Length: 196
Length: 196
Image (cartoon, rainbow over all chains, first blue to last red; front, top):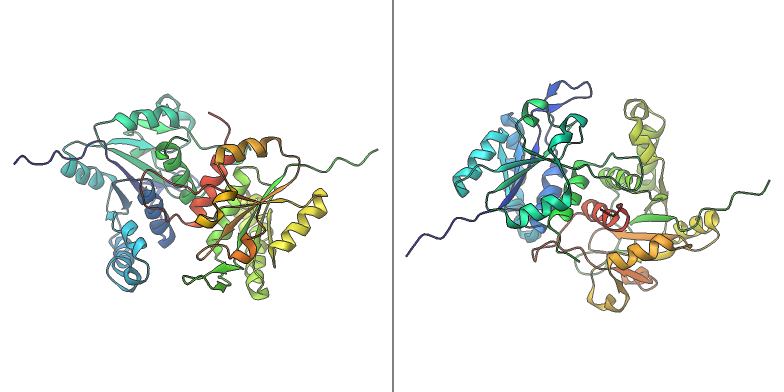
């Protein structure tokens, strides 16, 4: 018997708590919040993502994620709300985006394409529309890792090596201050919802 | 000078904490959460909704909303994050969906069309697709109130008088357990995002 072909074209996401920017643009590490772990896990599972990395270099912060996962995957939460443990089963705390990339390479044999969701004028040359990215993803054979920034967005030291940047999400107004939870949900819907 | 024509076709949303169902289908009142107030306010503002009603018959719960609004509209939060106060300026705690309907009628001279977002087989006859509803809303002259349920969804005593029910949100999987914050964001994006 031959080994099954490793899955290709899988899409992962990562919520980046470092390196991100504060209001003045300086690099900081933001705090992991319980609701970001839950909400984005549920959205990622609904839209068929292969995994969700929660990125923080601070060990005590990653332990917070481990405790959440323990409660919902094997503790009281798993018995009371089994559909929640399905979503949280895909969550992986990691200390850097590099660690997520290495993990994806270990599973799929290829480094992922990095796709960011930052609205910055200096990134204009790398911006792709949601519909173009949707088409690319539908036939991609390499894995993709979608990066969501917290605080005031991903720091340039990471953005510099991101190959593709999704167009920003706008409604019909000039106001655009969605939560990262809402932005992730809308991004997945635009990229992966069955065509209607 | 003539009075300005009252705005027509305005769209509001309401997050319903009563009457909603528990796991067994019994009517309950769920608790208001800080994050639901913030996230849905930011999404509603981004997508041009005219207002966001937070519905609870419990006075102490509505006071929680008042305190959040005070902090962000006039307190320290307003100075630090002015874009947040713009979003929260549209939030109105009310004791019932009826109170929201009366308030909309007071402003627009017409009761709103009620649009729910519940996935229930017994509602099939009233289900409309997102694209059909998007088209209707683009030319509607009457206001619309979009209802989002908390806990295990809106209780039949309220659903019975809802005229239109949006098709449920599905990704490409058989898993569908989005948070109400994610579901609201996706619903607004499907109904109101500029056509790409």
